[in-house]
Length: 372
Image (cartoon, rainbow, N blue to C red; front, side, top):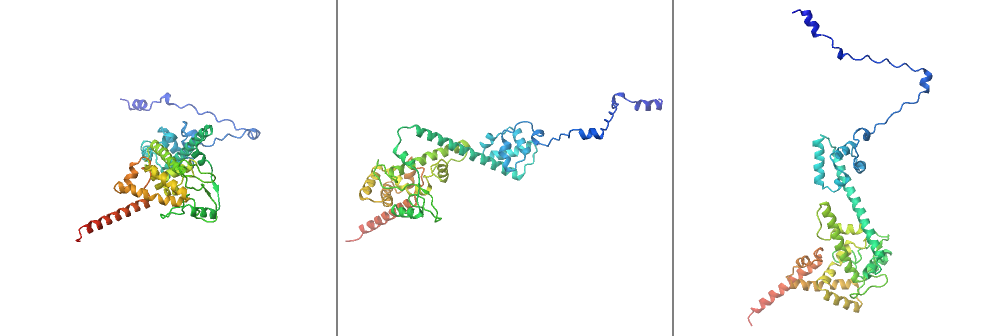
């Protein structure tokens, strides 16, 4: 074989691979043409135009104030998540979503972004909850405005608040029971501890008979018991919201319920006041006849709310004595009392009375065996 022929065939030129000739460079403009030419158009870099053309489903606005990178939000959107989906997810599900983001896209999430995503979702939940509360309040106000027959208790609840000096408040507190022995606030729950400033307070309570509506800047006991029914309704609303979100539902009236009531505009429902009179409400639920008789007697004698409140303990201790001294079981067995914690003083009184009865029984049994 001719080596020259082999070499020629090996390095044979293929015209198909010949590159086209390079275009001639454009003629350089003259100085006059260069001066009259318009300035070049420069396009600023924008990640939304280059990274992900699809919509982010509101994620960019949700994460904007929490240090979340745009590309992180874009990757979350590519996984199919929206703002509504994230708000309805639990914290454990958010962790799963972020782990999937790292595993599927090999995306390196910053530590701050992990916390920022959860913080943004929590803030959006609170905003949605506040909007829901405002919407419910507006609906309630519309119903109240169209109702021609106004309940007397509702009229009192809408009566409004008064602003009075601290000294005047303390004087009224002394006449209506003052602080209780558990260190709580007075019957209105609005004693000023800061000193020197004024704050809104609800009108004080007075002892009224069943069915009697207090006049003037006073509230009756029927209105007081009505507040406990309102607390029960607020608890049911909090439970419904927690159930929709997959969160733990409270079974009793806790601080969460009082905060919800305040957001709903019911600032007259506060923890100190409701804790202060819960045993009075318990007597009203367990033995309404005895409760009514006690109210009439104190009204006839002109007693104040503080004295009536203290007198409500004794009938409850008697009820506990008839049912084995288990006051907690008595509360839990009643549908309206089961959502309230047993007052500490009531439990202590039941314990002391039980010990007294046991000691008396022991003394009587011992004396029965003594020789005459």
